[in-house]
Image (cartoon, rainbow, N blue to C red; front, top):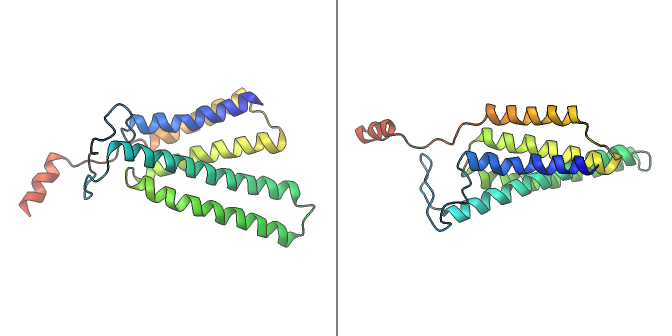
Length: 179
């Protein structure tokens, strides 16, 4: 079971490597340096604040997915003890609470990345949450072939949505000067 939690940890930490590769998070630069701005957005944040915002967003999204997975597995485990209406109320309350975490997290991270990167974040955090909760609720241990499959799916999602956030090109600047 410890291997399962280590896999979940490595999968979650791969998000930091992913965003570092995209130069969204940069721990090498001076934290007080101003960030490069995206098209149509002024550079109003420092690198340190950018790193903090992205880190908070990743944590909020993971916690939100943990709540979704807990409510799902909780409903599956305790459906015999509660009436159908009680199970539905608990599941809906868990989903509503997780949405209250997803919304600010998506707003925070959207200042720095595009929607594809947010999708990668949700997919990987969803994998992490459901694997961890399955291990906690059912004592599930991840087998090697399953870990490799999930790892390959994660890499595929990262490659599919791995384009760097757009920056202003010289050609676009010249076009803007003409108008």
